Amino acid sequence: MLKKLSISNYALIDNLEIGFADGLNILTGETGAGKSIILGALSLILGQRAESRYFFNQQKKCVIEGTFLIGEFHIKAFFEENDLDYENETVLRREISADGKSRAFVNDTPVNLNVLKQLGEMLIDIHSQHATLEINDAGFQLLVVDSVAKHNDLLLQYRIGHKVYKQLQSKLQLLIGQSDKAKAELDYQQFQFDELEKANLTADEQPALELELATLNNAEEIKRNLLGAYHLMNEGEISALLQLKEAGHHLSSLEKFNPAIGELHQRLNSSIIELKDIAAEIDDLEQRTNIDEERAAEINNRLNLIYTLQKKHRVNTNDELLAIQDELSEKIQQALFGDEEIAAMQKQIGIEKDKLRQLAAELSKQRAAAIPSIEKQVQVSLAGMGMEHAILKIENTIAGDFDQNGIDHIRFLFSANKGHTLAEMSKVASGGELSRLMLAIKSLIASYTALPTIIFDEIDTGVSGEVANKVGQVMEQLSQNLQVITITHLPQIASKGQSHYFVYKDNETATTYTRIKQLNENERILEIAKMLSGDNPGESALQNARELLRTVH
Image 1 (cartoon, rainbow, N blue to C red):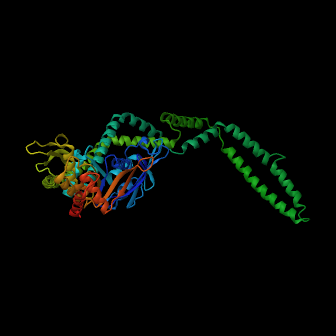
Image 2 (image 1 turned 90 degrees about the vertical axis):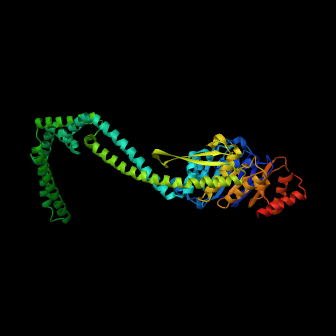
């Protein structure tokens, strides 16, 4: 329910705060006082378009904030899907700057306007006699039947199954497309795969081959320099090792004079041993370095093959070539064995379709059982609101295939007058008749399921007397199951409210403001008396007002 509405800098409103109660809330006031302005402001937090020209002060931003109690509406999943903090007391806020830029918030978390609109539609349902009513919408008509049928669990099970079914169908079409494409490209893909497979690639061979080729191509220079290094270290009269050994002899003759010289001699001997090992390895490496033109040509051919394949497939490594080879293998398998996967998928779809058909048949059966009750209850309710000859007929056409709601196509047909042919409501019902019909339907489904706050904007236009009283009674009955806010000019309806708010213009200063206040008992009597007889009600009007309130309360 809407607990509180705050409006700042909108139309004739500078700052206004309204606290609403549960049950039936009545808004009255003179024409032009600002009742529609309040609804206009409320529509902003329901995601409607904003225009800065409606600002009270063009230099300030407009802020509309609504506080809602949402615990009973089971919409926590919506908050999770949109990454919003869920609170039983949730605040929707809209801020519009003077340049027309708009920001929306849910519990202080920024959201886009579409999210605000979706959430707002779950919380507030506004009805106006002159608005396009959802009663003509096929989805709403089906919702009415489903609400009375009370098969939420069955419907949820069906919709989950239908979603799986559609996903499988999409996957099947994708498989068929992939299979057809794979078959068309099979010969070329097989050629590419065979070429890569024949190459017998390994992931790390390229760097090793490139290093070996570089060695072979420079073998002569490598051998020459290795021989030179070995000669300087271990051959000739002035080789490094020979000179180090001679140095060792000199140190050896001096060890007896200084222990430190002995340590240096030992370190020198260790170095000589290490250098001998290095010289031996240089000699061994030189012996193993061969000039092998045949091996170089072999490596060149192998690398040319690798480079050609990499260039052809626009990659730089063997790893990437091997990945392409695996991908080609999968595509070839798809072409060769895709029909088997398609057949398995078709079989699975057939199983899911049979399940859906059974669930859809049960849904249809329960809807058919609920329809006579809806027709009868709505007809009784309309008769009580002065439409004794009104008839609502619900037509159900069974479709050959099923959609997300089953196999039923629901259509409401209506006749407001005796002897007239039933037809779609938009073609045969006036605004006032549609309003009363919607009121009757909303009153019915409210007894079966939780509905959002309903706001009726002068839908009682065109009725009076006892009919107005009956309309008020239906609103009162409706308010026993949900919060109802009604803007009315009829005293019979105004007297039915548990809470009564008066909207008026404040002209005490140089600027006109729209104000609202909740009326106490005496103020209500006076307001209803004015609605009965004008601005200066006499004692009889006051007494009639007391009687209306006493009759209700």
